[in-house]
Image (cartoon, rainbow, N blue to C red; front, side, top):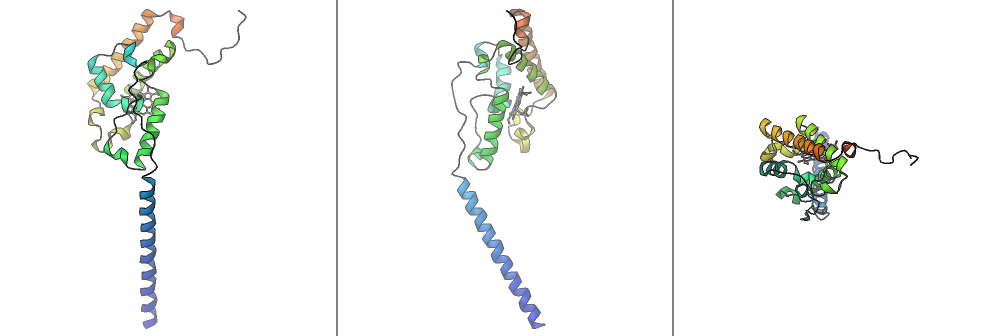
Length: 187
Ligand code: HEC
């Protein structure tokens, strides 16, 4: 009887020292990773920005700013929690991935057919509520990005109008997406 009590007590002790060690190790790791910071996305260069070629009414500009540009431009407005790792890594990953698909800061560098196609994708993404990413508005973060139906309609109409404008400005075949390596022609 006495022996059994002794065993239980010492088992409990080992358990709590283990828990303590694990906790301390975790804290050390959490502090350590604070020093590994991803590079920030903070360029002001707008040489090839969307509005240098395309019409961006003030209201649309505002929506793009509050709902899209953090991930789709070369300038992100970082919230305080972007100073905390590993959150910052996760954010940096979204920004990098988002910019690879669509970057409003370098938009007009793209061939006109691709710009046209990107407007088409904007329509799709906003219509299907795939963008902005859900995680962007979790927990009431970025409330301005929680787009109302009217705001979605405004973005969709704007992107459609840009495509119409391109259609009336450029010859039809220049807006057709070409393959990266077109099959060789005999010309
Ligand atoms: C929190 C970051 C984030 C925000 C905010 C965001 N996006 Fe995205 N977007 C992404 C990521 C990441 C991808 C690429 C992966 C994917 O498609 O899910 C992407 C992809 C896209 C694509 C390209 C899809 C394709 O097929 O290549 C379009 C168009 C797009 N987003 C439009 C928008 C618009 C318009 C808004 C604002 C209304 C917006 N996004 C807001 C992160 C974001």
